Length: 397
Image (cartoon, rainbow, N blue to C red; front, side, top):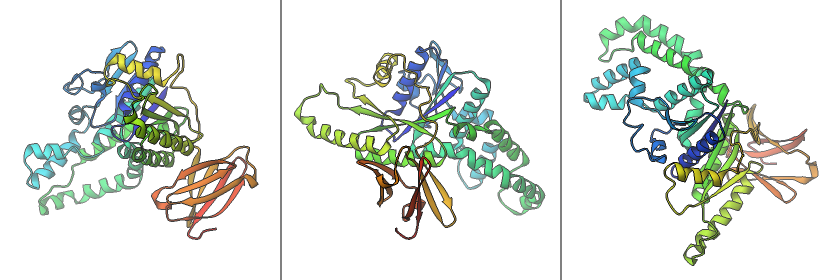
């Protein structure tokens, strides 16, 4: 089984790209599920199905073509079936604070609930081998990063805090409930948390396994969009996921020759060159802007034809390791970068704003640094086998 995550800044067309990929895979003979992990669900709209999924009190996959299914997580359905005790307790607490019943119920849908629900389905389908490929239409970049980091955070909580917290509250609950206006959570609340954790247990390992999971970042050839795509690339790598393709969507096609678009065309060319330089050696796919909205099965199919060659398998593994990684080392950090077939005298490096720039001959590689490392400076560098290791600390070389 393969899992493909499509992420990017809101409005770049990632839902359309994810849906088109699902169509291409299904037509290749693979049983495919496209599942929306975005709370703003637009997957059904992309297939021009109207509210077919939104209004259904279910989160079950919906068949849209032979071997192709789509799914949007219905949070109201999830609360009834999986979050009941947690939601009931939160609603009771919010009502105590003075909110009305409806307001309390709405506020009890806390951030991360839909992402965890989607993750439960991904884990369930993976274990059941129901599909050959799952295509995840993720939320905009920040929420996508929360989605991939949630399992690790919850795993830490379950191992280090959950047992102690549950035991402590069990001991003090009778007394505390008589003295405080808000009751402490009952044991059913903790049983619900444990049950949910068991349903997603192991998914973090799956997401970080390049043989199973790949990330595709969708972007536009615009400066503001590129900056967010660069940050996403860094943080997916930090979370141990491999980005194996960049999709540049809505490029002006050659047949558009009106002088009104000359400025746009030049800006897109410059940004596209920057994209190819920054993300190398990760391949960059280019998709033209279409005359009409990409809406409905046939237009999504046309988008798939622009994305993939005939017979090309989008689920094929093209990269098995991130091109760089970050390691904490004492008081400093080091960046490890794959540089095969490179000699010591060929390498130069310097820091520019929040990027580490590595130059090999006439080729430059730009490595965006996480927030915790942006103030650090390169101290020394060495070649170790196929890798360039750069140590960062408080003092410059």
